[in-house]
Length: 208
Image (cartoon, rainbow, N blue to C red; front, top):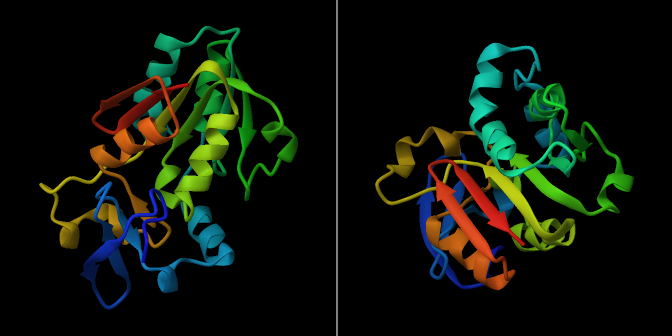
């Protein structure tokens, strides 16, 4: 199988009784074999199991670091989009409390196609990019949604070889189908011609 991000060849990487994964020989990403990709119905069922109550303090605290990044880099008058916001859009809730303007888009819970016809000063994707079945097309779409110099704020768990994939909690969610490496994010920066990338633990920033 070729990598769904950079289209390079891959090699078998890991298999258990539930799923199989490949590893890209170029960007070093790990991705689920096509035959195990979840259906749309299975995805929605899984997302509904998430405890995404916007008033849940623990959930707010989990997302607060990416909210703080937005507050640091963006002004209240900037126009943002929470892409893949999920059933409980905590990021929107926290930013609106600070006077920020933000739209929502989620194919399951906020299916507002009109919000994909605008351009934004920033996009926020919290625990979203690991669900992409076609990350190459998704990042192309994301860049098209940005104004010049606009920012993308991503929260995910990148993979590196210090992690034991067999014991890694992040792979156990059947809807997590694509795992990025530092090399993958650098490839995205170069291929989609972003001006800047910043990687800080689980938060990744791109600037158009």
